Image (cartoon, rainbow, N blue to C red):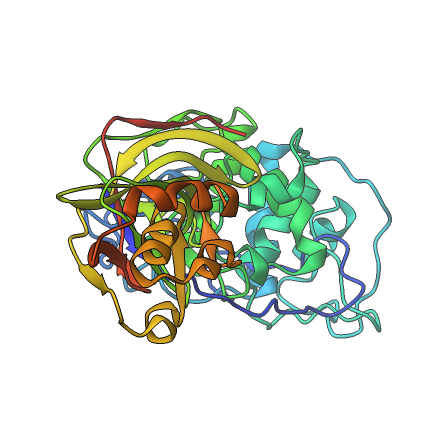
Length: 414
């Protein structure tokens, strides 16, 4: 199923300078409670992250609370995340890659001091300028993903912009996080609920989300089995087929109306008016894409026939057409040419017809011609001489010209 969504823009958030990997937070309480493997009271059987949470609990990487809850929607602090990384590293087995450091806001007596030092030495975490760690600060989603990508040495064989183009809110990703998040995406570590194509990079990560990220990193490391979830972002390139019968929202949005005779064909390029997305929210054809084709008119009316979709610099054949436009306008001898031509673009034959009926030969040489051009218009005048009127098809600005596919549209991966 395909849906239409208007484009939305966001402002990229900027994190403190000097972070090399990510400052982070885990899924454990500040004073971790006993391990609890299943049946958290607030994690229902159909909860989107249930399997991720239970698998990590079974491995002893996360824990619930004494009241039997997990609190999946609670935020995670950087200290909590460091504690989780310490437990997960028994599976990652990431070796020490640098010496320790004394963060000014993490005294040796702090409950997560040793976990923070281990996460720093193994390359998962770094501090902020001034040698501070901010252990009680909630960690955004992008920091968790950057931490895993950098700590586990992920890389991407694709260009970062190409990979991040999957996300509708890619512009919100901080500049320092773009390459690592692209790497995390390619390695199937990113899990986005409820819409896979929305990353929400600067929003604070929840306990459930961090559980999903950590679990997917374990899968990548060969330390956990795959979990079937529609919310895992999979960047394996596959062709996407948009089935026949789907309509692509387009409009003729120019300020000029188009006038054609009833047997005329003129070239026309239309702009996609709204995002075409899958039911999972992935944008397949973004608003602003263009469709090249032509207006074809007959005695019954005119319709737009699509030929080429211009998508991200590619030209893709497309087979579809709009509904029939039947609006007409009659040009009569002695009528006001000025009024007729105001905000109008004329097909070559229409210009010839108007010239012949009104006697104004200059119309056939105006710059508002579309189609074969003024030379052809002048040669067609003879065809309409002697008529007192001619009926033209009129396509007004903002006319609905949605293209309904006549056959499947196959979009190959980039």
